[in-house]
Image 1 (spheres, rainbow, N blue to C red):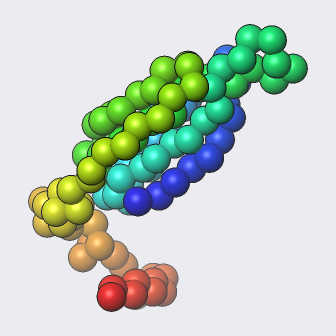
Image 2: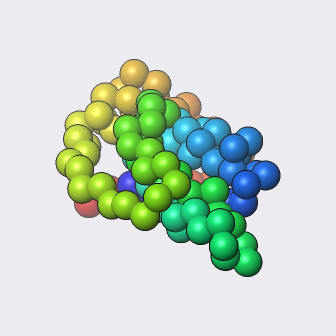
Length: 105
C-alpha cells in the first residue's frame, strides 16, 4: 500500500485528487490511501477533503467525502497478486535500458 498525505484545494481537488490516486494505484498495481484533511470552510486554506482508498484496479473502495471521518477496512493482498498476474508489468521491464531493484521478502 502506498499512502499519500495531501491537501488539495477546491480548485485542484475536483480535477485531480481521484484521478491521480486511481492512476497511481493502476500504475503501481497496489492499494493507494490518499489522506486529506477534512474540509473546513472557515480555515485560511480550505482542503478538498475526500480521503480515499483505491484498489490496484483503480476502483475507489472508500471516499470519506468532506467531513472528518475514519474508515477501518480489510484489504485483500491476493488482489495485488491477481492484478499483477493479469497485467504483468513487472515482467515487461526493460532492464537492458535501466536498472531496477525489487526486494521480495
